[in-house]
Image 1 (cartoon, protein in one colour):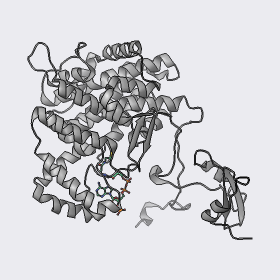
Image 2 (image 1 turned 90 degrees about the horizontal axis):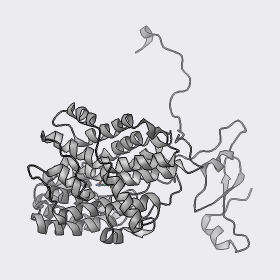
Image 3 (image 1 turned 90 degrees about the vertical axis):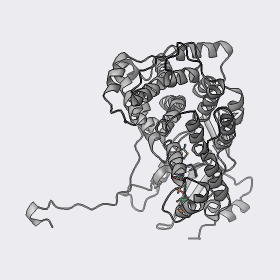
Image 4 (image 1 turned 180 degrees about the horizontal axis):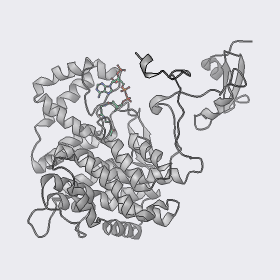
Amino acid sequence: MTPPKTGTLMNSETSAETRRDTLTITDNRTGKQYEVPIKNDTIRPIDLRKIKVNDADFGMMTYDPSFSNTASCASKITYIDGDQGILRYRGYSIEELAEKSTYLETAYLILYGELPTQSQLADWSYHITHHTFVHESIKKFLDGFHYDAHPMGMLISTVAALSTFYPESKDIFNAESRRKQTYRLIGKMPTLAAFSYRHSLGMPLVYPDNDLSYTGNFLNMLFRTTELKYKPNPTLERTLDILFILHADHEQNCSSTAMRGVGSSHADPYCATAAATAALYGPLHGGANEQVLRMLLEIGSVNNVPAYVKQVKAGEKLLMGFGHRIYKNYDPRAKIVKRMAYEVFETVGRNPLIDIALECERIALEDEYFVKRKLYPNVDFYTGLIYQSMGFPVTMFPVLFAIPRTSGWIAQWEEMLLDSEQKIARPRQVYTGYDLRSYTPMDARK
Ligand code: ACO
Protein backbone atom coordinates (compact mmCIF):
# COMPACT_ATOMS: atom_id res chain seq x y z
CA MET A 1 0.00 0.00 0.00
CA THR A 2 1.24 3.52 -0.75
CA PRO A 3 2.23 5.40 2.39
CA PRO A 4 -0.23 8.10 3.40
CA LYS A 5 0.57 11.67 2.46
CA THR A 6 1.38 14.09 5.23
CA GLY A 7 -1.13 16.78 6.20
CA THR A 8 0.97 19.53 4.61
CA LEU A 9 1.24 17.76 1.27
CA MET A 10 -2.48 17.02 1.25
CA ASN A 11 -3.32 20.67 1.88
CA SER A 12 -1.11 22.09 -0.85
CA GLU A 13 -2.25 19.47 -3.36
CA THR A 14 -5.95 19.57 -2.60
CA SER A 15 -7.67 21.46 -5.38
CA ALA A 16 -11.03 23.16 -5.09
CA GLU A 17 -12.75 20.22 -6.89
CA THR A 18 -11.26 17.50 -4.69
CA ARG A 19 -11.71 19.40 -1.45
CA ARG A 20 -14.06 17.61 0.90
CA ASP A 21 -14.92 18.35 4.53
CA THR A 22 -13.66 14.98 5.65
CA LEU A 23 -10.63 13.50 7.33
CA THR A 24 -8.95 10.40 5.92
CA ILE A 25 -7.30 8.20 8.49
CA THR A 26 -4.97 5.33 7.68
CA ASP A 27 -4.73 2.58 10.28
CA ASN A 28 -1.16 1.37 9.93
CA ARG A 29 -2.02 -1.82 11.83
CA THR A 30 -4.23 -2.94 8.97
CA GLY A 31 -3.43 -0.55 6.14
CA LYS A 32 -7.14 0.33 5.92
CA GLN A 33 -8.27 3.88 5.26
CA TYR A 34 -11.30 5.54 6.78
CA GLU A 35 -12.99 8.79 5.91
CA VAL A 36 -14.76 10.69 8.65
CA PRO A 37 -16.78 13.90 8.30
CA ILE A 38 -15.46 17.25 9.61
CA LYS A 39 -17.91 19.84 10.91
CA ASN A 40 -16.88 23.04 12.69
CA ASP A 41 -13.27 21.84 12.59
CA THR A 42 -14.18 18.81 14.68
CA ILE A 43 -14.65 15.13 14.08
CA ARG A 44 -16.89 12.87 16.11
CA PRO A 45 -15.09 10.18 18.08
CA ILE A 46 -18.05 7.85 17.47
CA ASP A 47 -17.04 7.86 13.77
CA LEU A 48 -13.74 6.31 14.83
CA ARG A 49 -15.49 3.30 16.31
CA LYS A 50 -15.48 1.64 12.91
CA ILE A 51 -11.67 1.52 13.04
CA LYS A 52 -10.95 -2.04 14.11
CA VAL A 53 -8.26 -4.67 13.65
CA ASN A 54 -10.76 -7.52 14.00
CA ASP A 55 -14.53 -7.55 13.71
CA ALA A 56 -14.75 -8.55 17.38
CA ASP A 57 -12.81 -5.44 18.50
CA PHE A 58 -14.67 -2.70 20.33
CA GLY A 59 -13.34 -0.09 17.91
CA MET A 60 -11.17 3.02 18.27
CA MET A 61 -11.86 5.53 21.02
CA THR A 62 -10.13 8.82 21.84
CA TYR A 63 -8.27 9.27 25.12
CA ASP A 64 -8.45 12.82 26.45
CA PRO A 65 -7.96 13.09 30.21
CA SER A 66 -9.18 16.52 31.39
CA PHE A 67 -10.90 17.10 28.02
CA SER A 68 -8.15 19.39 26.81
CA ASN A 69 -9.05 18.86 23.14
CA THR A 70 -12.60 17.57 23.32
CA ALA A 71 -15.73 19.66 22.80
CA SER A 72 -18.47 18.21 24.99
CA CYS A 73 -21.25 20.35 23.56
CA ALA A 74 -22.21 22.97 21.02
CA SER A 75 -23.02 26.26 22.72
CA LYS A 76 -24.26 29.71 21.76
CA ILE A 77 -23.61 31.36 25.11
CA THR A 78 -19.99 32.41 25.55
CA TYR A 79 -17.16 32.80 23.07
CA ILE A 80 -13.51 32.76 24.13
CA ASP A 81 -10.44 33.15 21.94
CA GLY A 82 -7.69 32.22 24.36
CA ASP A 83 -4.82 33.23 22.07
CA GLN A 84 -6.22 36.69 21.39
CA GLY A 85 -7.58 37.21 24.92
CA ILE A 86 -11.19 37.66 23.75
CA LEU A 87 -14.30 36.97 25.85
CA ARG A 88 -17.86 37.61 24.65
CA TYR A 89 -21.28 36.77 26.07
CA ARG A 90 -23.82 36.15 23.29
CA GLY A 91 -21.57 38.13 20.93
CA TYR A 92 -21.09 41.18 23.18
CA SER A 93 -17.54 41.94 24.29
CA ILE A 94 -16.80 41.69 28.00
CA GLU A 95 -15.21 45.15 27.89
CA GLU A 96 -18.40 46.77 26.57
CA LEU A 97 -20.65 44.89 28.98
CA ALA A 98 -18.43 45.83 31.94
CA GLU A 99 -18.64 49.47 30.92
CA LYS A 100 -22.31 49.76 29.96
CA SER A 101 -24.32 46.91 31.45
CA THR A 102 -25.41 45.78 34.90
CA TYR A 103 -25.13 42.28 36.35
CA LEU A 104 -28.86 41.59 36.16
CA GLU A 105 -29.04 42.79 32.55
CA THR A 106 -26.01 40.65 31.65
CA ALA A 107 -27.52 37.64 33.44
CA TYR A 108 -30.67 38.09 31.32
CA LEU A 109 -28.55 38.30 28.17
CA ILE A 110 -26.64 35.14 29.07
CA LEU A 111 -29.81 33.23 29.89
CA TYR A 112 -32.13 34.38 27.12
CA GLY A 113 -29.70 35.29 24.34
CA GLU A 114 -30.66 38.96 23.83
CA LEU A 115 -30.35 42.18 25.81
CA PRO A 116 -33.69 42.85 27.53
CA THR A 117 -36.01 45.69 26.55
CA GLN A 118 -36.80 48.16 29.29
CA SER A 119 -39.97 46.32 30.33
CA GLN A 120 -38.28 42.92 30.14
CA LEU A 121 -35.49 44.17 32.39
CA ALA A 122 -37.98 45.70 34.84
CA ASP A 123 -39.92 42.44 34.97
CA TRP A 124 -36.75 40.35 35.34
CA SER A 125 -35.34 42.59 38.11
CA TYR A 126 -38.71 42.53 39.89
CA HIS A 127 -38.81 38.73 39.92
CA ILE A 128 -35.21 38.34 41.07
CA THR A 129 -35.76 40.94 43.82
CA HIS A 130 -38.92 39.16 44.96
CA HIS A 131 -37.25 35.77 45.27
CA THR A 132 -34.46 36.72 47.66
CA PHE A 133 -35.99 35.42 50.89
CA VAL A 134 -35.19 31.89 52.01
CA HIS A 135 -37.32 29.59 54.14
CA GLU A 136 -36.79 30.22 57.86
CA SER A 137 -35.74 26.58 58.29
CA ILE A 138 -32.60 27.37 56.28
CA LYS A 139 -31.54 29.52 59.23
CA LYS A 140 -31.86 26.54 61.59
CA PHE A 141 -29.89 24.46 59.12
CA LEU A 142 -27.13 27.11 59.05
CA ASP A 143 -27.08 27.17 62.84
CA GLY A 144 -25.73 23.62 62.77
CA PHE A 145 -22.42 24.76 61.26
CA HIS A 146 -19.38 25.58 63.39
CA TYR A 147 -18.65 29.28 63.73
CA ASP A 148 -15.48 28.78 61.62
CA ALA A 149 -17.12 26.71 58.86
CA HIS A 150 -15.93 27.82 55.44
CA PRO A 151 -18.71 29.84 53.77
CA MET A 152 -18.30 27.84 50.54
CA GLY A 153 -19.10 24.64 52.48
CA MET A 154 -22.19 26.37 53.89
CA LEU A 155 -23.19 27.72 50.48
CA ILE A 156 -22.86 24.33 48.77
CA SER A 157 -24.97 22.68 51.48
CA THR A 158 -27.68 25.30 51.63
CA VAL A 159 -28.10 25.47 47.84
CA ALA A 160 -28.50 21.69 47.82
CA ALA A 161 -30.98 22.02 50.69
CA LEU A 162 -33.16 24.35 48.58
CA SER A 163 -33.95 21.32 46.46
CA THR A 164 -35.95 19.89 49.38
CA PHE A 165 -37.99 23.09 49.70
CA TYR A 166 -38.92 23.20 46.02
CA PRO A 167 -39.71 19.61 44.98
CA GLU A 168 -41.51 20.94 41.88
CA SER A 169 -38.07 21.94 40.56
CA LYS A 170 -37.72 18.32 39.44
CA ASP A 171 -40.08 19.19 36.59
CA ILE A 172 -37.07 20.20 34.53
CA PHE A 173 -38.71 20.00 31.10
CA ASN A 174 -41.37 22.51 32.12
CA ALA A 175 -40.22 25.94 30.90
CA GLU A 176 -42.32 27.79 33.52
CA SER A 177 -40.80 25.74 36.32
CA ARG A 178 -37.28 26.34 35.01
CA ARG A 179 -37.94 30.08 34.90
CA LYS A 180 -39.18 30.04 38.51
CA GLN A 181 -36.12 28.13 39.73
CA THR A 182 -33.94 30.60 37.81
CA TYR A 183 -35.48 33.53 39.71
CA ARG A 184 -35.04 31.66 42.94
CA LEU A 185 -31.46 30.61 42.38
CA ILE A 186 -30.23 34.00 41.20
CA GLY A 187 -32.30 35.74 43.89
CA LYS A 188 -31.31 33.51 46.80
CA MET A 189 -27.61 32.94 46.20
CA PRO A 190 -26.65 36.35 47.70
CA THR A 191 -28.94 35.69 50.68
CA LEU A 192 -27.40 32.28 51.37
CA ALA A 193 -23.90 33.73 50.94
CA ALA A 194 -24.58 36.66 53.26
CA PHE A 195 -26.27 34.43 55.86
CA SER A 196 -23.21 32.13 55.81
CA TYR A 197 -20.94 35.12 56.36
CA ARG A 198 -23.02 36.53 59.21
CA HIS A 199 -23.20 33.09 60.80
CA SER A 200 -19.41 32.85 60.81
CA LEU A 201 -19.26 36.22 62.62
CA GLY A 202 -22.02 35.31 65.06
CA MET A 203 -23.90 38.39 63.84
CA PRO A 204 -27.69 38.55 63.47
CA LEU A 205 -28.85 37.78 59.95
CA VAL A 206 -29.95 40.73 57.82
CA TYR A 207 -32.98 40.22 55.59
CA PRO A 208 -33.08 41.40 51.99
CA ASP A 209 -34.02 45.01 51.27
CA ASN A 210 -36.10 45.25 48.08
CA ASP A 211 -35.35 48.96 47.63
CA LEU A 212 -31.71 48.24 46.86
CA SER A 213 -29.98 46.96 43.72
CA TYR A 214 -28.79 43.34 43.44
CA THR A 215 -25.30 44.16 44.71
CA GLY A 216 -26.50 46.98 47.00
CA ASN A 217 -28.80 44.53 48.76
CA PHE A 218 -26.00 41.97 49.00
CA LEU A 219 -23.76 44.55 50.70
CA ASN A 220 -26.69 45.38 53.00
CA MET A 221 -27.14 41.74 54.04
CA LEU A 222 -23.40 41.40 54.64
CA PHE A 223 -22.48 44.62 56.40
CA ARG A 224 -25.52 46.30 57.92
CA THR A 225 -25.27 46.71 61.68
CA THR A 226 -27.49 49.14 63.61
CA GLU A 227 -28.53 51.60 60.90
CA LEU A 228 -32.23 51.60 60.11
CA LYS A 229 -31.59 51.80 56.37
CA TYR A 230 -28.34 50.63 54.83
CA LYS A 231 -26.85 52.90 52.16
CA PRO A 232 -24.30 51.09 50.04
CA ASN A 233 -21.24 53.05 48.92
CA PRO A 234 -22.03 53.69 45.21
CA THR A 235 -18.43 53.04 44.04
CA LEU A 236 -18.27 49.71 45.85
CA GLU A 237 -21.78 48.77 44.72
CA ARG A 238 -20.87 49.43 41.06
CA THR A 239 -17.46 47.73 41.44
CA LEU A 240 -19.11 44.60 42.75
CA ASP A 241 -21.68 44.76 39.95
CA ILE A 242 -18.88 44.91 37.33
CA LEU A 243 -17.05 42.05 39.03
CA PHE A 244 -20.29 40.07 38.88
CA ILE A 245 -20.55 40.81 35.12
CA LEU A 246 -16.98 39.56 34.62
CA HIS A 247 -17.72 36.33 36.46
CA ALA A 248 -21.14 35.57 34.97
CA ASP A 249 -20.06 32.85 32.53
CA HIS A 250 -16.94 31.30 31.07
CA GLU A 251 -18.16 28.49 28.80
CA GLN A 252 -17.09 24.91 29.56
CA ASN A 253 -14.95 25.39 32.66
CA CYS A 254 -14.77 22.87 35.50
CA SER A 255 -17.89 24.10 37.33
CA SER A 256 -20.05 24.50 34.19
CA THR A 257 -19.00 21.01 33.21
CA ALA A 258 -20.10 19.81 36.66
CA MET A 259 -23.42 21.64 36.21
CA ARG A 260 -24.01 20.07 32.82
CA GLY A 261 -22.77 16.65 33.96
CA VAL A 262 -24.97 16.47 37.06
CA GLY A 263 -27.87 18.10 35.20
CA SER A 264 -27.55 15.48 32.45
CA SER A 265 -28.81 12.85 34.91
CA HIS A 266 -31.93 15.07 35.23
CA ALA A 267 -31.18 16.08 38.81
CA ASP A 268 -33.00 19.26 39.83
CA PRO A 269 -31.22 22.61 39.28
CA TYR A 270 -30.49 23.14 43.00
CA CYS A 271 -28.56 19.87 43.25
CA ALA A 272 -26.77 20.62 39.98
CA THR A 273 -25.88 24.14 41.21
CA ALA A 274 -24.57 22.69 44.48
CA ALA A 275 -22.32 20.39 42.41
CA ALA A 276 -21.14 23.31 40.28
CA THR A 277 -20.45 25.37 43.41
CA ALA A 278 -18.44 22.47 44.83
CA ALA A 279 -16.38 22.31 41.62
CA LEU A 280 -15.79 26.05 41.83
CA TYR A 281 -14.50 25.74 45.41
CA GLY A 282 -11.27 24.01 44.33
CA PRO A 283 -8.07 26.10 44.47
CA LEU A 284 -7.36 25.44 40.79
CA HIS A 285 -10.69 27.04 39.84
CA GLY A 286 -12.74 29.61 41.78
CA GLY A 287 -10.87 28.95 45.01
CA ALA A 288 -7.78 30.48 43.39
CA ASN A 289 -8.75 34.05 44.36
CA GLU A 290 -8.57 33.06 48.02
CA GLN A 291 -5.22 31.33 47.45
CA VAL A 292 -3.81 34.39 45.63
CA LEU A 293 -4.37 36.52 48.69
CA ARG A 294 -2.91 33.88 51.00
CA MET A 295 0.11 33.70 48.66
CA LEU A 296 0.60 37.50 48.67
CA LEU A 297 0.41 37.49 52.46
CA GLU A 298 2.92 34.62 52.59
CA ILE A 299 5.33 36.48 50.27
CA GLY A 300 4.97 39.42 52.66
CA SER A 301 7.15 41.98 50.86
CA VAL A 302 8.29 42.99 47.39
CA ASN A 303 11.83 41.89 48.29
CA ASN A 304 10.67 38.31 48.80
CA VAL A 305 9.08 37.99 45.34
CA PRO A 306 12.21 36.69 43.53
CA ALA A 307 12.67 33.94 46.13
CA TYR A 308 9.02 32.93 45.77
CA VAL A 309 9.22 32.90 41.98
CA LYS A 310 12.33 30.70 42.29
CA GLN A 311 10.28 28.17 44.27
CA VAL A 312 7.56 28.31 41.62
CA LYS A 313 10.08 27.64 38.87
CA ALA A 314 11.48 24.74 40.86
CA GLY A 315 7.99 23.21 40.79
CA GLU A 316 7.56 23.57 44.56
CA LYS A 317 4.70 26.06 44.37
CA LEU A 318 2.21 27.51 41.94
CA LEU A 319 1.97 31.19 41.22
CA MET A 320 -1.70 31.37 42.12
CA GLY A 321 -3.80 33.54 39.80
CA PHE A 322 -1.51 32.76 36.88
CA GLY A 323 -2.16 30.43 33.99
CA HIS A 324 -5.31 29.26 32.34
CA ARG A 325 -6.40 26.24 30.34
CA ILE A 326 -7.79 28.42 27.57
CA TYR A 327 -6.10 31.83 27.80
CA LYS A 328 -2.58 31.81 26.45
CA ASN A 329 -2.63 35.59 26.62
CA TYR A 330 -3.64 38.14 29.25
CA ASP A 331 -7.10 37.20 30.56
CA PRO A 332 -9.32 40.10 29.35
CA ARG A 333 -11.14 40.05 32.70
CA ALA A 334 -7.86 40.47 34.59
CA LYS A 335 -7.11 43.65 32.61
CA ILE A 336 -10.44 45.17 33.68
CA VAL A 337 -10.04 44.02 37.29
CA LYS A 338 -6.53 45.49 37.52
CA ARG A 339 -7.86 48.87 36.39
CA MET A 340 -10.76 48.69 38.81
CA ALA A 341 -8.46 47.93 41.74
CA TYR A 342 -7.05 51.45 41.53
CA GLU A 343 -10.55 52.96 41.45
CA VAL A 344 -11.44 51.06 44.62
CA PHE A 345 -8.20 52.11 46.30
CA GLU A 346 -9.18 55.74 45.69
CA THR A 347 -12.31 55.14 47.77
CA VAL A 348 -11.03 52.84 50.52
CA GLY A 349 -7.26 53.39 50.48
CA ARG A 350 -4.42 51.58 48.73
CA ASN A 351 -4.04 47.90 49.52
CA PRO A 352 -0.31 47.40 50.28
CA LEU A 353 -0.42 43.91 48.76
CA ILE A 354 -0.81 45.49 45.30
CA ASP A 355 2.93 46.21 45.19
CA ILE A 356 3.72 42.53 45.77
CA ALA A 357 1.19 41.54 43.11
CA LEU A 358 2.64 44.01 40.59
CA GLU A 359 6.15 42.74 41.25
CA CYS A 360 5.00 39.11 40.78
CA GLU A 361 3.42 40.11 37.48
CA ARG A 362 6.46 42.12 36.34
CA ILE A 363 8.90 39.30 37.05
CA ALA A 364 6.63 36.61 35.64
CA LEU A 365 5.93 38.42 32.39
CA GLU A 366 9.66 38.77 31.75
CA ASP A 367 10.76 35.36 32.96
CA GLU A 368 11.35 32.60 30.41
CA TYR A 369 9.57 29.97 32.56
CA PHE A 370 6.29 31.88 32.37
CA VAL A 371 6.79 33.27 28.86
CA LYS A 372 7.48 29.80 27.42
CA ARG A 373 4.38 28.36 29.10
CA LYS A 374 2.27 31.40 28.21
CA LEU A 375 1.31 31.98 31.83
CA TYR A 376 -0.45 35.32 32.31
CA PRO A 377 -2.56 36.73 35.16
CA ASN A 378 -6.06 35.28 35.16
CA VAL A 379 -9.23 36.85 36.60
CA ASP A 380 -8.37 35.73 40.12
CA PHE A 381 -5.03 37.50 40.34
CA TYR A 382 -6.34 40.98 41.21
CA THR A 383 -9.91 40.32 42.41
CA GLY A 384 -8.74 39.28 45.89
CA LEU A 385 -7.08 42.65 46.43
CA ILE A 386 -10.35 44.42 45.64
CA TYR A 387 -12.40 42.10 47.82
CA GLN A 388 -9.99 42.50 50.72
CA SER A 389 -10.05 46.29 50.37
CA MET A 390 -13.85 46.18 50.40
CA GLY A 391 -13.75 44.39 53.75
CA PHE A 392 -14.37 40.79 52.74
CA PRO A 393 -12.50 38.02 54.56
CA VAL A 394 -10.55 35.69 52.23
CA THR A 395 -12.93 32.79 52.81
CA MET A 396 -15.68 34.83 51.13
CA PHE A 397 -13.73 35.29 47.89
CA PRO A 398 -14.88 32.08 46.16
CA VAL A 399 -18.43 32.83 47.32
CA LEU A 400 -18.22 36.14 45.47
CA PHE A 401 -17.43 34.13 42.36
CA ALA A 402 -20.23 31.59 42.86
CA ILE A 403 -23.02 34.18 43.16
CA PRO A 404 -22.66 35.72 39.69
CA ARG A 405 -21.61 32.44 38.03
CA THR A 406 -25.04 31.05 38.93
CA SER A 407 -26.58 32.75 35.89
CA GLY A 408 -23.98 31.13 33.62
CA TRP A 409 -24.50 27.74 35.22
CA ILE A 410 -28.26 27.90 34.71
CA ALA A 411 -27.82 29.01 31.08
CA GLN A 412 -25.42 26.10 30.46
CA TRP A 413 -27.78 23.67 32.21
CA GLU A 414 -30.80 24.81 30.21
CA GLU A 415 -28.90 24.70 26.93
CA MET A 416 -27.82 21.14 27.75
CA LEU A 417 -31.37 20.07 28.65
CA LEU A 418 -32.83 21.45 25.41
CA ASP A 419 -30.09 20.05 23.18
CA SER A 420 -31.49 16.94 21.53
CA GLU A 421 -27.97 15.60 21.00
CA GLN A 422 -27.18 15.55 24.71
CA LYS A 423 -27.63 12.45 26.83
CA ILE A 424 -26.52 11.53 30.32
CA ALA A 425 -22.81 12.40 30.57
CA ARG A 426 -20.94 9.15 30.69
CA PRO A 427 -17.34 9.12 29.46
CA ARG A 428 -15.47 5.99 28.51
CA GLN A 429 -12.26 4.81 30.16
CA VAL A 430 -9.16 3.00 29.06
CA TYR A 431 -9.00 0.13 31.53
CA THR A 432 -5.39 -0.47 32.64
CA GLY A 433 -6.03 -2.73 35.65
CA TYR A 434 -5.68 -6.47 36.16
CA ASP A 435 -7.20 -9.08 33.91
CA LEU A 436 -9.43 -11.66 35.59
CA ARG A 437 -7.92 -13.01 38.84
CA SER A 438 -9.05 -15.71 41.26
CA TYR A 439 -10.12 -14.70 44.74
CA THR A 440 -7.20 -15.11 47.17
CA PRO A 441 -8.13 -16.70 50.51
CA MET A 442 -7.10 -14.60 53.56
CA ASP A 443 -4.36 -16.99 54.75
CA ALA A 444 -2.72 -16.93 51.29
CA ARG A 445 -2.44 -13.11 51.09
CA LYS A 446 0.90 -11.40 51.60
N1 ACO B 1 2.39 28.58 38.42
C1 ACO B 1 3.48 27.89 37.98
N2 ACO B 1 3.47 27.05 36.95
C2 ACO B 1 2.30 26.89 36.31
C3 ACO B 1 1.12 27.57 36.70
C4 ACO B 1 1.20 28.44 37.79
N3 ACO B 1 0.15 29.13 38.21
N4 ACO B 1 0.11 27.20 35.89
C5 ACO B 1 0.63 26.33 35.02
N5 ACO B 1 1.95 26.13 35.26
C6 ACO B 1 2.86 25.31 34.51
C7 ACO B 1 2.60 23.84 34.74
O1 ACO B 1 3.38 23.33 35.82
C8 ACO B 1 3.02 23.25 33.41
O2 ACO B 1 4.44 23.21 33.38
P1 ACO B 1 5.18 21.96 32.64
O3 ACO B 1 4.80 22.11 31.19
O4 ACO B 1 6.62 22.19 32.92
O5 ACO B 1 4.64 20.72 33.26
C9 ACO B 1 2.57 24.28 32.40
O6 ACO B 1 2.58 25.52 33.12
C10 ACO B 1 1.19 24.03 31.82
O7 ACO B 1 0.29 23.99 32.89
P2 ACO B 1 -0.90 22.96 33.04
O8 ACO B 1 -1.10 22.68 34.49
O9 ACO B 1 -0.69 21.78 32.15
O10 ACO B 1 -2.09 23.80 32.49
P3 ACO B 1 -3.60 23.50 32.75
O11 ACO B 1 -4.33 24.08 31.60
O12 ACO B 1 -3.84 22.08 33.07
O13 ACO B 1 -3.90 24.32 34.09
C11 ACO B 1 -4.57 25.96 35.62
C12 ACO B 1 -4.55 25.52 34.14
C13 ACO B 1 -5.21 24.86 36.48
C14 ACO B 1 -5.42 27.20 35.74
C15 ACO B 1 -3.12 26.23 36.08
O14 ACO B 1 -2.56 27.27 35.29
C16 ACO B 1 -3.02 26.59 37.55
O15 ACO B 1 -2.98 25.69 38.40
N6 ACO B 1 -3.00 27.94 37.89
C17 ACO B 1 -2.97 28.35 39.26
C18 ACO B 1 -4.38 28.30 39.85
C19 ACO B 1 -5.27 29.37 39.29
O16 ACO B 1 -4.93 30.54 39.24
N7 ACO B 1 -6.51 28.96 38.93
C20 ACO B 1 -7.53 29.87 38.44
C21 ACO B 1 -7.78 29.66 37.00
S1 ACO B 1 -8.95 30.82 36.41
C22 ACO B 1 -10.42 30.26 36.97
O17 ACO B 1 -10.68 29.10 37.17
C23 ACO B 1 -11.40 31.24 37.28
